[in-house]
Image: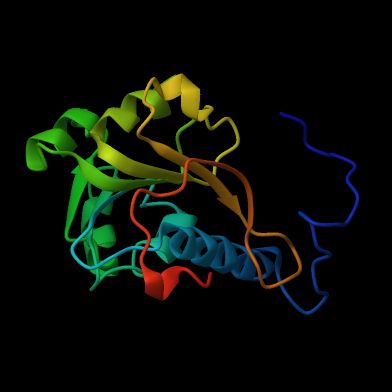
Length: 189
């Protein structure tokens, strides 16, 4: 990986304010991305949502947002399981000690309603997709998210979500199949 790169300030990059440290200037981006993912999920009460990568910085923003409405199952390494449960996850899966897909299906044999992916790419994400119930959704923030056809499931909605550096609306570049359930209260979105 390169130590330096030349980029242009634009949709996906903003100048760091002089008054903020590098770490502090990253917080708004994480918050905006987390909010975009949760808004794209349009979660309904009682849904089961598996958050892959919940122990990371973006996970610390995403996990608490839908709690109370949905059951959050979070992946985290070892003792980070305590951390994600403190954030509001109902349960956690130690991805170093168990196969997340197998464990998720043991806990929820019919599958989860949605996976929020904050970490996986390619084949590992396709494998994790087996834990999603028929007609369910995958929301991903990672580059390298496979195309919907690569999952081998016509019933699966795959959405890649990220926030632009400016503007209030999330940019959702790929959305295959609308979510199976839409309600009149949400049709104005």
